[in-house]
Length: 552
RNA sequence: GUCCCUGUAGCUCAAUAGGAUAGAGCAACUGCCUUCUAAGCAGUAGGUUCCGAGUUCGAGUCUCGGCAGGGACGCCA
Image (cartoon, rainbow, N blue to C red; front, side):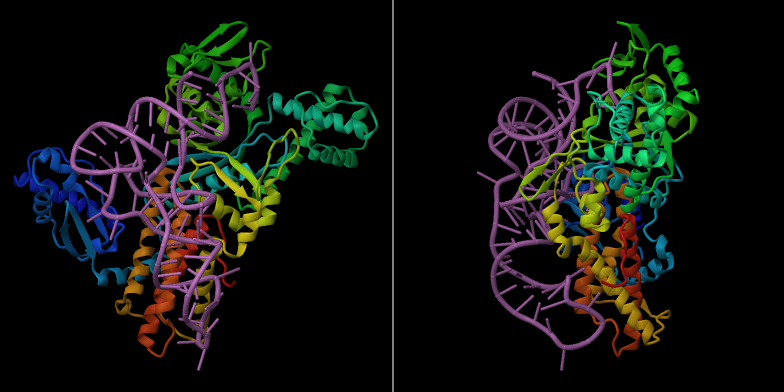
């Protein structure tokens, strides 16, 4: 990647300038090279001289001059210019830029991949919603974020596993099972009540009806505990099926569905607990078992096992993360949680420390809440009250591509309003179509070229010298850098903005440069460029999990 | 009360570890279809980056103090 090469070049130049006594013997800061926002400043710029100025006790312009002298000429760089108040600006040669079209064609769908991850094993756990009902809109955010992130991490050279943690144990599920059982009995006219902490949604009745249809009244005759367990089991698999299909509708698929219960059945819960105990982080008081998280930096201790003897959700999570790191040996684990789990982060970090693991191996992305709106009125989302807009409804209304694009456009840190009216009304003006339209346009050009039997395989990219052509190439070359940034910072929201920029650059090129013309040499060169652009659009759309339409 | 996230154009949001003149989309306004897709292009207008201090060559970005919105502070998950 050129950016890296320039950084190295600069680093060496600075070191050499220092060795030669041109700048004082001071420590060099982290050297960064970036794209200036003003194109007049060139393709890349560094503010290194400004950063050195304070310690060097020299005028930054002077430092810039002195360092620049040690930057050797390279085929990529046309000129290196020093600019006030102390920047070093690099401008690339048109020739090198044009040649990159051939490189992109050669890389094909691999273009944009980088080696950052070096094959490191990363686990990405997301959604992981309790299977007590359908997914709602907020869950879509985490789903899309996680799925997209995994695409990007894979492109960045990580070995990624996507996992859904199924909370099939615990009190919430028990409440759900009992709710199902109550509805089931009611279907036969028997008196039964939804438990106080139960689920009242219409879907519960729906599922119970299905069970009635499939199994008849056999559960009426079973003793309650057994009936609840068996009905629960059927209900669980039904809910999981529907969650799976809702996610599939969005284009989200998991590699592993991990059962919480398996932690208990496989003995990993016991192992994790005894490890914590052995290391001295477990105490007992008030009849309960506690993890002394406050010793590890959390602001309070947390209960692992209730006085009733039932393990808490937190205890499961200890075992689960023990499993991730120690049993399955992931180098890095990324959890995506909703804002309501924010307070859980310090606990989990404390757990890792207590288990003797480096807490930085766990990264938690917190997605802020999504408030749903229909015009001006807010739609309350609550599983228990039963009134909600499901993810499925949203996807069916708005479309998977638009959903993904809209959700991706906001950084996880910001809470967002999702206006259903707007999302629907916007559908024609939505930026998602702007980007896809560029791809469709390209496809249309390539179709015409095929129809006319034009073979552009030998096109000479050196003919690509005009402003719009070079601007398009420059933009395309940002993709690998973007993949790296998104993978490093875990911020996929950069993708849609790049895609829009790319589309703007392409549409502008399209307007100004006729691709298929009487000039056969130029036609071949431009067809190469257009084919390269198709690759980049296709790549960025697929990274976002969207389709790249051939026609619109 | 404590902790976390957010506050940027009328609206929805960006701003690539502190960089050069804060940018997009929608909405508004003005032009552009006889050639590869007008779901497009070119342009105009729109800002005290919530307020106040501080740090330094430089702050939307960092620190402190306010204000506003959201979330969390359970032997729920």
